Amino acid sequence: MLILVTGASGSGKSGFAENTAMRFGTRVTYIAAMKPEGAEAQKRIDRHRVMRRGKGFHTVERYTDIKSLDVRTPAILECLPNLLANEMFSPEGCGADNAEDETAEGIRTLAAKCEKLVIVTDEVGSDGITYGAATEKYKKILGSLNRRIAHAADEVYEVVCGIPMKIKQEGQPCAY
Amino acid sequence: MIFVTGGAYAGKTEYVKNNFGENKITVNGLHKIIRDAMANGLDPYDKAEKILADNPDIVICDEVGSGIVPMDAFERGWRETVGRISCMFAERADAVIRVVCGIGVKLK
Picture 1 (cartoon, rainbow over the protein chains, first blue to last red):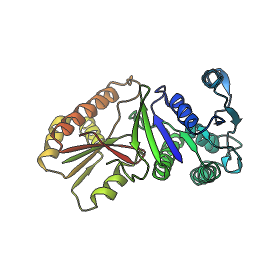
Picture 2: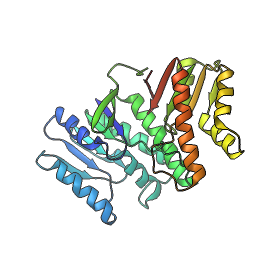
Picture 3: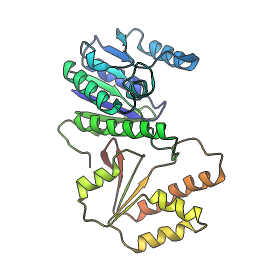
């Protein structure tokens, strides 16, 4: 079971993803992809830690190379945009040219190993702004990965103001 | 006319190709057409009416209004105009589809 959760910043994706993973079992593995770099990142990480407190989650910090990760099911990957940014732009990453294939392969492997996986992603292409070449490449790859994961997923949700909208159901190739 | 909206790189063009075939009269990138008209001092609403008068089967437009209000007046005006003209097309369309992660969500 692969579930993709998307939505705007601050829309309540993480809380929904956590509750969804808990439906599948009590011992949830939480794969945290955000690097604790700087005060703002730390604040966000702390907020998510408080949200997870008491839920009995097992947290694994993993910033790149999720292919070689061994995790217990169910699991949450939080989040794809961070993982991709690390792969593309951090020294430990595989670099911008390999990032799409590496990340897609990593997710495929992770989803196969871990029977129930919830992936949190972001909507980054709706602000009408054209950025520099590196950022546009990042947007394009993230859009492509979102589509590839949505295609493979059993369920896809867009969360709006904390309300999850199911836009793809199991056995339904397309919501149209 | 079917109006297709959604963020950049959400998979709108691919969605249209897969679901409606390649032989439809498609206007792809309405947001860019609006931008070009405005940059050349033309009335974007006139341009929009001309597009509608040609009776396209499908019109594809990026959703561009979900960020910070731009400081630059042209960017601000363009962003709002894309929203207004999208409403106009959606009102006249037989169906409106918003593409999210490659999935078409029917709004109308």
